[in-house]
Length: 512
RNA sequence: GGUCCGUUCGUCUAGGGGUUAGGACGUAUCCCUUUCACGGAUAAAACACGGGUUCGAUUCCCGUACGGACUACCA
Image 1 (tube, rainbow, N blue to C red):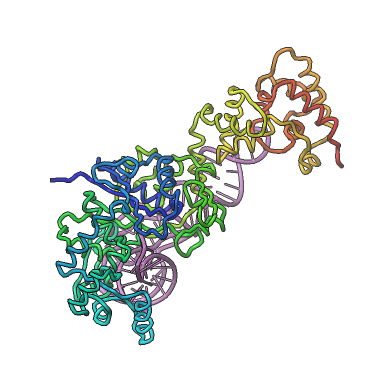
Image 2 (tube, chains in turn orange, green):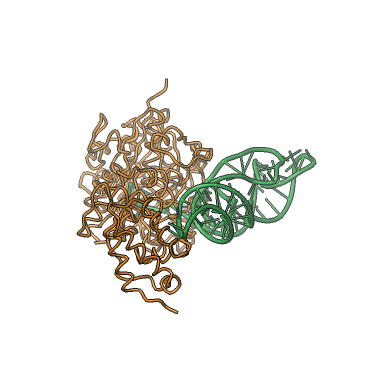
């Protein structure tokens, strides 16, 4: 019998959701949709010291922005709540105690000073990896070494304690990762990880196994940083007696720095000037600010498409995928094994593709908002016309206005380099005539009529129209490059055009 | 250091015992054109190294190198 696929994304609310986390969420979402299953979100807030207010709301907002919201979550609960581990706190202890009873876990009373001393001792003795394990636990204060009476007395008197897993001495632990195949680890390299902390909270290891089991999780898709502790998790499933329903694991390759070494981090964002977070974030504790893809002008579909391709590909040459198409094409088998360097250029390219696929009306919204922010106004009709000729050259919606300002604002000064090369007597002659012809025109101009008139103006002086185009552009826009000039003329309109030409004729000097 | 994972153009990747090793971003050149951009075309650009196995290895195996993750009462 096939169980319904249930996957989860389990972030901890310790700050802004990192782009790697967003990709993990996306892959979980895609897999759930593809398999007709459910995508849940669980908040892993068992470390109360690292809690950051606003982080959970940030996670919610980011997923909503990207349209990959979970089916079950703290804010849209299903039947497996609560969806915050802090709210599940009362249920973990019984599982830890179950393990103690079965002899797979034990109480440990060592203070942090004693643990430090142990590590120092081992380091001094040149033990390769100082850890609390099958060997060292015999020298520590725990229910394996202390007399039973003392253990009972300590527990009764409220001595602080943790519960540790008792790793078996000689055992090969293996798991079949969906991405990496069989991974084998010998238990003697594992340590007796803490399961229950002295504050009564479970650690990640205990909580994630208990919750995944209780929530019916069938596949755990998470980052590669979890691979080393996966054997421990397998052991836990076994000791709980849940091995038959143990989820399948898929450990995703990491997102790496663009220049080589290590995981992508916020520092890379600052260093290279691109975002690594989905949205802007201001840390309430440190006051640190970080820019987001959303605010930087990335369209959600483009960002998602870009993200999907960081470690996955459909196996053919298609690159542009809507969310639905991604769902359709997605498979865990096609996720790569190796770490992926982050290339912002590719993200920009995706954004350009999506920007161009939007209608002029859709994009006008951005332009109108930006225009009004500058204290100007523009009709919807005109905005759409501006967008039509600007969107082919924009990467972000903000470029529409940033690069197209000259269409509503007359130039005050002119590009010197262009002026010295192109501004000459021929240009002045043609423009003077053009200005007159425009002034004598009774109707408003179109791109076609503007061009016909300009050609005429050049022809009467026996000058080739192409020869003066650069100068004309300079006169009207102030710069030497831009979109189709005649389309610009149509948008600017006759009166404004005449006024700009007059200003240029009065201002620009011929340089020799 | 130990354990685990990885390694195809600069980057993301396809491929897989015999291929001109394919695509995309970026770069360069050309075409289009009133400029720039878009678009189109072309080019440069990769199987980390060493051993096996094999008629043949980039592909399979083993080493080495390099990179990464993990190594907390953090997740």
